[in-house]
Length: 329
Image 1 (cartoon, one colour):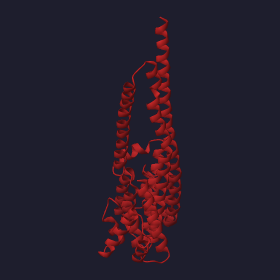
Image 2 (tube, rainbow, N blue to C red):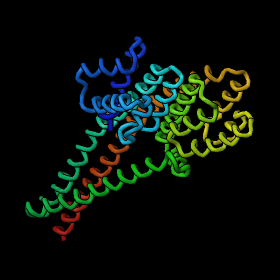
Image 3 (cartoon, rainbow, N blue to C red):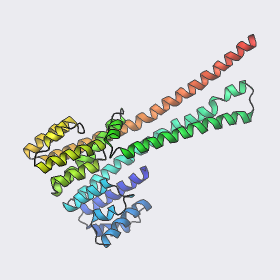
Image 4 (cartoon, rainbow, N blue to C red):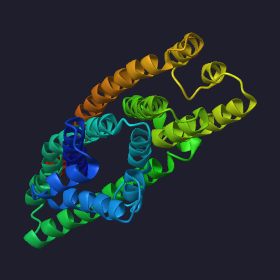
């Protein structure tokens, strides 16, 4: 995933640079084709070029393979394409995937040492006691294999449950709320969801899309079950012709400071400027939060590993003193 995010960051950054310089999207694609892109970026480029050759829009071209390009990307690209702000849309995506790639890379790097320590604890933790008890090499290896056979499935289950929850969160408000309540991780997820929401909302406003389409695109892009549920109330309010400020203020899905700011910006006609400011703020908060999570998770894991090693050491000494007492008797 981190490699995928890294390649998407590079791909969208290059597209943003070329489009900003005045290249048309087809010409930009040809320029990138000549640079012999790596495989993942080549797949994105081929997806775009194939769709354009078939007469599709840029967003429709990317949307042809949901497994490669997410609804978030299609929403931002579609809004930028229709509003003549394609370069800005590509820059938004480049910033977003740079954030994902950098934080995931930091988290993986920080997890290496605790993982090695865990295996050392399993391999060496029971060795002194085995030697003291005169166990055979085969018995020691069997004990280590049993501990590893327990550790790996437990780790696999934790990973799979986490992935299931993350997959359900964009459409299930309860799951999203549960994840949002987890210390550190919840705050980072909420900031990232709001960064996506405000980025797409701002892009759609600049593109001149209808408010109903703007809200729909932004709530979909947020990938948050709570924001998606709040989006239904926003759409209902738009259908009655009322302003959205009071709905933002009454909803628990949005930070109060943002909701108040939206309400005053709506009254003053400065939504585009206000959303641009909030998009940048949430992006920065999400980056800081992701870095804190990347730093905290390995420390927590490290603490658990240290506790495991200490438990093994205490178990050894307990057995050692018990053996001495038996000898004394």
